[in-house]
Amino acid sequence: MSTAAPALLQPRPNPANGLATSYLRIRATTIALCAGLASEDTAVQSMQDTSPTKWHLAHMTWFFEQFVLGRDACYVALHPDWMVLFNSYYQSVGPMHARSQRGHLSRPTLAEIIDYRQRIDERMGTLLSRDIDIDLQKLITLGLNHEQQHQELILTDIKHLFSQNPLEPVYRHASPSGPATALPLSYVRGREGIVEIGHKNATFAFDNEMPRHRSLMHPHALANRLVTNSEFAEFIHAGGYRTPTLWMADGWNVVCERGWKHPLYWSDTLDSEFTLAGREALQPHAPVCHVSFFEADAFARWAGHRLPTEEEWECAAANAPLRGNLLDSSSLHPLPAVGAGRGGLLQLFGDVWEWTSSPYINYPGYRPPVGALGEYNGKFMCGQWVLRGGSCATPADHIRASYRNFFYPADRWQFMGIRLGRDA
Image 1 (cartoon, rainbow, N blue to C red):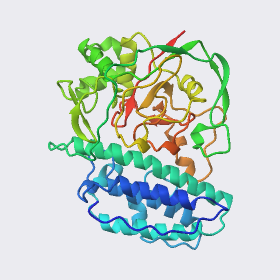
Image 2: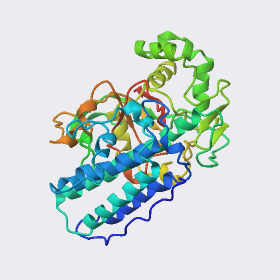
Image 3: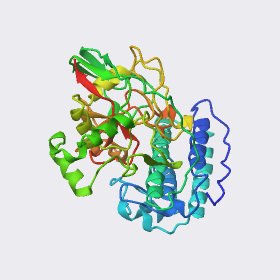
């Protein structure tokens, strides 16, 4: 950013809470993601679903001020009039500025928001140097995971913003590479019978990952790797976007209304795509990304298969190593599958969020938390679909097998892709 990043306060880590180091690291990562942006880049909103970077920076800080520091009844907000500007959707907290108008906020300036961030970090540093109760530790942990969600949103929102500019700016130069030949597609049989899914230990998880419960698994198999660009291009050349019988009715309506002919960011000639490193040649063996649920479902139907259920995906990933092409790898783009490819599932974590055929609804016995934070996930359990596995923009210590992401079926500006499943 053109405004220098602040020097964060270094609180003395308190063994009783163990959060000070994580707080400093995660907050510093956010600033590092913004390091190459000009102040002008941070102020623009390219569509209603995205937010300006400086809004993200303020909102993440608002979260700590509102829910952590504000837990003290005597706390006085630094900028009381900002509390409306940077509330996202917490109706229980109070009014909020319209989401579609976040790009209209030329003030506060980026410099003022950076100062706000630094001053809240100082107050959080003081708090983290003391003994704090378990409930407060849980709130801070939630706040840090919330910040990591917005780290991914900063990247996807900037990508969409830059893609709208005829100059096609480069966010960060990268040189993704992969094998010269594609890993053969094969299918791995999954578990059958009654299984348990959902978060199962005392580590952090969002409320929508719980409670752990039983689910019946029918005979099935999952593809060993993600669908590639070249495979999706075959679907296009075969008339996939011109064949209504492949699409759900709502999906076909979207295709017609929006004129979709290929994944978001692909050129009309199908030989290049816009990336965070600018426009690059389409890698044939890299996972297709920026496709909606409607596109993923249509492709699966065209291929004679289907999308996995979230239960099938979670059971497959439950004992898999938690590694992959995630934010920490710095590629910022999906990469081709590599590995033995014999008897195992690849690319379960990272590269792209994988669409499932499961609607985003509550697990049996789910109850949203009491209070404003009960609005975090529960009230969105309507009309959206579950994605699993994280992406190349997801922090590695943020993802897990039970993690449930969710978006509307026409959304595709996130790193969203496809793994095929089938009945067995």
